[in-house]
Image 1 (cartoon, rainbow, N blue to C red):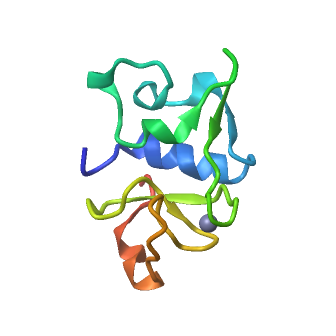
Image 2 (cartoon, protein in one colour; image 1 turned 45 degrees about the vertical axis):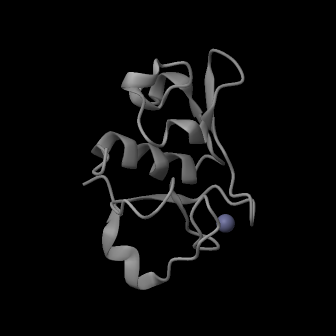
Image 3 (cartoon, rainbow, N blue to C red; image 1 turned 60 degrees about the vertical axis):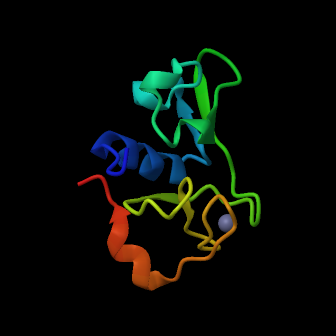
Length: 105
Ligand SMILES: [Zn+2]
């Protein structure tokens, strides 16, 4: 899916202000761990669910940040860390790419 749904982008915005932890019920179904492969969003692997009630966004492996943006670029694997500006592969993206952020609106 190249253009994530507004609900997915909104979920990342919410996670940024809740230390990466959200009620599992607030996670769009396509992001929920355990959803069958065909219905999974490309970002579903960034979420874990330690129990039935919460979902946790995987922190940035470079800086530990949980403020992340959904990007509309196929070239960006996973989401983009807003603290160190790297994607999940560790590739940096400068602010000129912010126009490709999916703000959820
Ligand atoms: Zn980071």
